[in-house]
Image 1 (cartoon, rainbow, N blue to C red):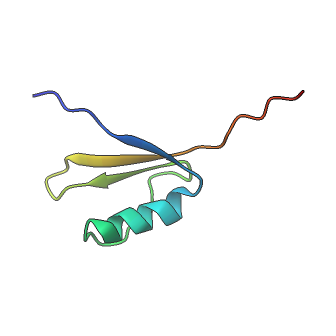
Image 2 (cartoon, rainbow, N blue to C red):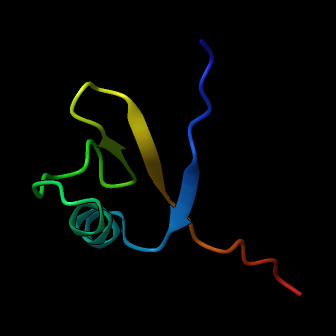
Length: 60
């Protein structure tokens, strides 16, 4: 079976991970990196990926 991973761009991975873990009723854990974290089901299935995102600033 193939699965897709939903990736959400966030400004603060650690705070967002904590919020989504509370939403899904999961214990709080730290993200894998400062710029990336995953919400996993109890069987290891990836439910959600969070990736640091900042708008690209283009000089005028």
